[in-house]
Image (cartoon, rainbow, N blue to C red; front, side):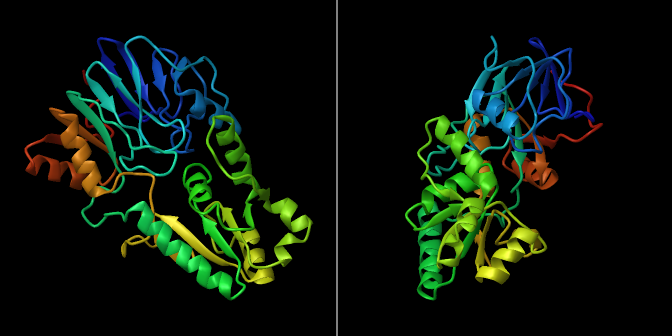
Length: 320
């Protein structure tokens, strides 16, 4: 682990995994287009999916020298968001962010066999176990129905890339359904790639035409803080109630997962048991844990007889 992210030096050459700045002297792999995985500067060859390349451009970073395939490298669907991939090379598999649970058009990741596994463990504590998608859908449909019966509009909050599209599919039967303008833009890009999402008005157009005055309605927005001016207006002017979706929603330790009036547990990552199952299925002889509860998850894997250690900066400069 370096200050620029994960550096691998193998027989294939130098590979940077989700680097902060892409490097001229190696292959730079970008797993997906969430902002915390996108580089800030170009340099050298960037390997990612076609979808990640396009979403990256929409989010303000144009990938130069982009390729979507290279000899010796296999991009494996990671099930996280549209275009998200893990990378298999030299018997090493890097998961990026991963989810082994079907969620609408996002299908569960298929984990390849490997000798070395580098895995995220965002939810690498036993307390994180997530409900089934149909359970979430039933819970939220009932909540929306109860609020609709009182004439109360509902705002569903989820990340602009990932949860927002899942929510559009799960709750597209509600009418009228509006989208925050930023989510409408992202949904249009998904439709370009053949993802079936309901056509909805953006919030600016709906508000301009006085449609938000005709309550109730459902709107899908990004995750917004209580101090956000747009959200404050939706609540004060229209009496909207918010439902937030987060993998952190059930945790008593991490309050940032409960920013909404109602909080629902839903994530684009593996939960704890899914992470353990994924590691076991990989057959990896050596596991490196990153992003999350790295110490705790590695310790648990070692109790299962799986050699694991956190990959932290300065613990090693490179490995092969």
